[in-house]
Length: 398
Image 1 (spheres, helix red, strand yellow):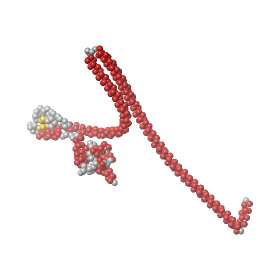
Image 2 (cartoon, one colour):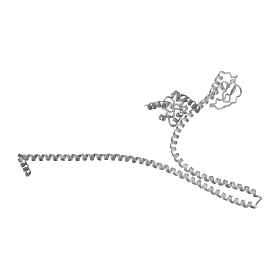
Image 3 (cartoon, helix red, strand yellow):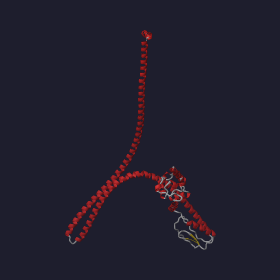
């Protein structure tokens, strides 16, 4: 420490000269340059380390993205593997079924081979019999004609057996071709089975609704029959004082009916209509008979006839109430809630292709469309086809 103090004391004592001051300034400048150079070196190193850190962060992000993509790919592959396993199980099941069919074809082939062998044995026996017959024919000239006829018959049988053998061979070839076709059809059936399941579900729903409609119609027919029976009883009661003739029941359908009458005041025609006689004079009876005749003349219009009549009305409305359109202008009517592929085909068949046409239906035309496509009554109005179609049409126009 003493040496250091002595050094600095001598240094500052010597500062009274110009050279000493210059030396001190140079020393200070050098010190500042060293500090500046160190600071710049440190800044470059810090910048380089920051860049390396940024690059590493980028690589980490890329690796993270790659890891996520790899995980997604792994999950997709795992799902694909599960689907492949399911398809493999289906293929194995199909293979087992084909093996069973192959075994059946093998059994059929074995049976045909046995039949061919039996046919060959029969043919050999027939040949031996033919040879014996020829030898006997040489020894019995007088019976030659009879043996000749028998020989022709045997020859005919031989030809028939040969033809049968050829048919069996052709049948065997056809079985091979059928086996190949069955394999192809089996693959197609597997694809159609899925579509068939969806169709069956849809048809079941339609069938349930149709069953409800049929039950309602049957209940109405039973009610009409009961009313008819009551009406007949009332007429017979009114006629009780004048004649003992019983008026037959009015049929609830349009079938042909005949009835036996005991006197001429009231009789039925071959179609079940009641005719008045001159002796019937009661106004109440005449009024009742007129009502029954009116009831008899009513015929329930079949769905087919109602559909045809509705189609004619819609056809007449095209171009006037409804804008005319063709298949080239066709919109996707399945976008309307309540319309599926089957109903869309029926609508196209009666000339309805676009949203604009459906939006132009009024209440009367809605009923006609219901009859024409044989749809459930009130369903078009409940599902608001007209409103949905108008909205889709406005959306398409933008």
